[in-house]
Image (cartoon, rainbow, N blue to C red; front, side):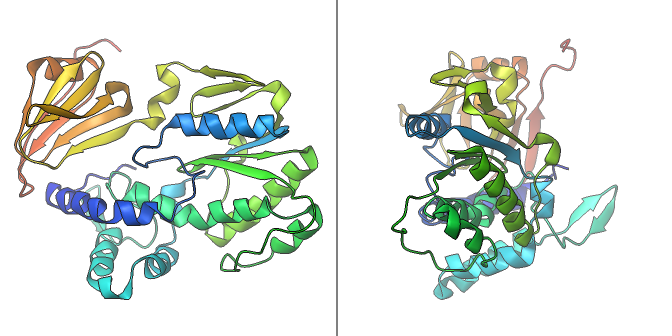
Length: 330
């Protein structure tokens, strides 16, 4: 369920996101490639190709079942204690307030006792925060020999990292985009062991893998991840239909910008200089929250491409939403 966040809350959350993005991002592992500025699918290609060159022969494909609704808010609050300095207690209180905000369903208000709001600008970075210990655990398994690996399976997630052993490391590599991930191993036995340990570790976070989307495959047979098909040394990027899940909202929270169309992309300009160009295929919707000028060509392209465009004042006052053409035959 994607929740509709009040515009006033959206604005505050977007500014909170700007405050915490850079500090939090420094804690995240390189193998976490989702919802991070400057990180694209290209990084996953580089990691996977390097692993194949190093002799990794098997891949575990999986994702987490109902991830956002399953997040344990008590665990998340504990993580915020660890990541945010004590002097920033005010920031932590505000974040927790938005995290625990209730929601209205069918006209009835519900207290939030679990899960992250899908539709909140804060939820993607909080998802990465929640799964950061998982990323670190997978990385740690890659440093252990087969004999040591089983021993760590029962360790708590707070166990300090061990020094690299003298024996040959098992070899485990992770690539994760939000709740969708793959784990690369050198043998099928390693893959089977790691999959079992992955289920056990995720259960400590109140999560479980989606069985019907979980499989162990040989690199020889190829596999697909994030709309990219890997076939031994070949890399095939799939079409637009396979990348719909990678789309994200574009929030405009800075005043006096000019948004214009540049082919199949949006140019964001300030003082007559392009500050960013974003492909339209990566945008699910546009939410303008400050004084902004938009070209008519961009508006037309958004309606043709089924990209809603919402305009609101900085105070959170809603003005209008330009919706795609409802008469268009899908």
